[in-house]
Image 1: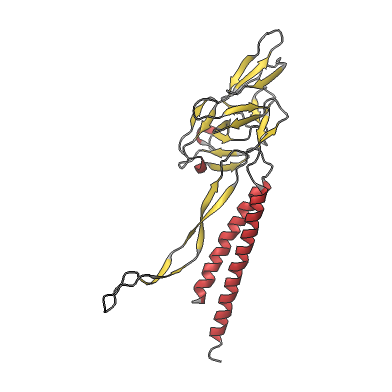
Image 2 (image 1 turned 90 degrees about the vertical axis):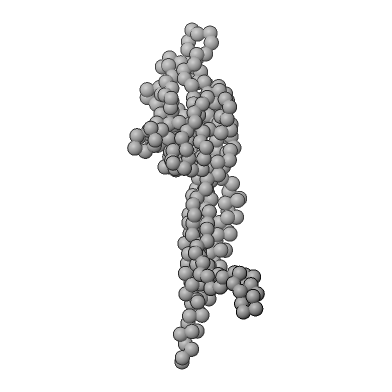
Length: 269
């Protein structure tokens, strides 16, 4: 009946509205360091079975197909794209770009992340008032393990294996102020997004595996650079147009179903 068509089309409008929200968020973060684009996955709903395939008639002939009417669509989840973002020049010696797999670890509240640790691909690090290396976001999350630069250091840099080197006056060679550790996950798409360029561990992601940059399965560090957003504006704009057209078609389905119901209601006149 036309009522089913209206309900199915309405579920399509709801699902497409979610896709529109996700696409808009991707475009809004086209310049966010370490941001990973998301997409919406959909799944069809239950079906009304009006005829079952394989049933036999009086002659023993089997029905080759069934007769099913679907009840619409729903969002099954959002899936993040963890492909590498482009390197962009940084303006701080503590800017870091992960070439390959891995996340930086930063300290958060104990009730926010498992063990008080969150994970990020954004490498825009700076020093706080205590000369600790912190993430240059609104909360200034400390890098974990904590790295503190000497107050009298003339300069500092980051090596490919994650060593933070500082130059102390009077010393011939740079000294190691600390070591950056990276974390990887079996299912990184299962991480929970909490904003602030951060993810936290979830049951779906599995527990983190930590190690030094450049070692097996871990990416290396490119100092003085940042990882840009992996959002492709052209792809997102095309997705925006596709969503808009699909929204219009579902709206037309509702309009057609409404006209059908109106015609039925006028049959007795």
